[in-house]
Every structure is written in structure tokens, then in C-alpha cells.
Amino acid sequence: MEIYIHLDKHLDSRIDVVPIEYAGRGARMNEPFILDYSAFLEDVSLCIKKKRSKTIPFCILGYSLGSAIVYDLLEKQMLSEQPRHVFICAREALNHGSKSQRYNLLSEDEFL
Image (cartoon, rainbow, N blue to C red; front, side, top):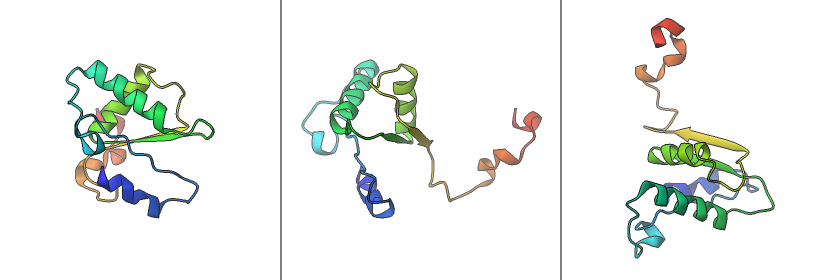
């Protein structure tokens, strides 16, 4: 969570970073963890709805487990409005390349 707070200094001042905290974590530490995944997705969807501005477009960044959560929220159409962009990533920062990340250099047959 803390890493997302520091994104503000790297972004255009017109971009507002609004991290979503899960029940049982961070500012929501006193709430019980949600053990049912459907209920968890509903909670995250509600948090997004409450925190985002209704007057400007929004984007979503899902990192690591958050990427699966974002995918499921979109696939199940659980957001009241579609985001303008969705950024999904995992593992290390994208600027740390490795051989396993060079899939774009493979032919389709090699990739499959």
C-alpha cells in the first residue's frame, strides 16, 4: 500500500492516486478479513465506487494479486463505470527485464 502513496510525485499533478485498502489491512486493520472471494470483490468494488471522483475519468492499476482482482472485477462487470485504462502487471518492476520476459521476441509457435 505504501508504495502507491509515493506514486504522486512521479505523476502529472492532474492525476490523483487513490489506493484501495483491503479489509484487515492498513487503515482497515480493525475490520475482519473477508474470506469469501465474491464478497471480497464486492467490497473492493464498493471501495472504488466510494473513493473515485464521479466527475473525471479513472484508470485502474492492478499489481500482483491486484491484477487478478482487477481482472475479475472487470470480467464480472462489478464496476459501475468502465475505467478509461487498465494497467495490469506483476513480478518485479517492468524496467527489470529478464529472459523470461522476452516473449515478444518469440515466434507464435515458439511462444505456444
